[in-house]
Image (cartoon, rainbow, N blue to C red; front, top):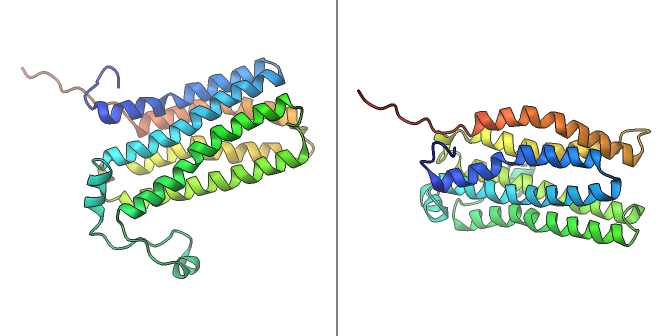
Length: 238
């Protein structure tokens, strides 16, 4: 992308997204090498960048649509969007007109994660300094807040895709959604699965998750390369 710098408004966002794989891998590797206390600071940096990537991805989707105002103009004539909650639940909720209010809801639902993630990361540092990080009730509270925040962000990102997929179809949105959501959200739920693995101590579970992340980022890097390929420079004419 840096070599073929032809679309700065979108490529700037893409480069930030591409960096997520090496940063995840490096942070996970450092967490394996350093002490448990130091690994908390490393994971805090990873959490901050994770929140930044979600904001960047939302900005990229809107940029593909020509900006927020242009996106509203392109989708406002489309039929209202049903909530993607299954046929039974969707009928209980009113359909959402594809207007600026829908985009605002999507931004609010997604950006709450951008606020909650860093806030909880810094709260974790304070709890560690106070010696309360391993407290059962603190961990239960963190788990509840994270699950609600992740689920809301995942849901509203999916709504963004459904609302704009006809506008951004030529940009292969499915591959981009799978790549970014896979890295951020699948790795989180993977960490929960490892943490609650029967008979596995919490410290060992954290280290196993870091090791798996290091290996996984190889595959995710390949997925991102296919999802956001660099533009090919035109060949000079003879």
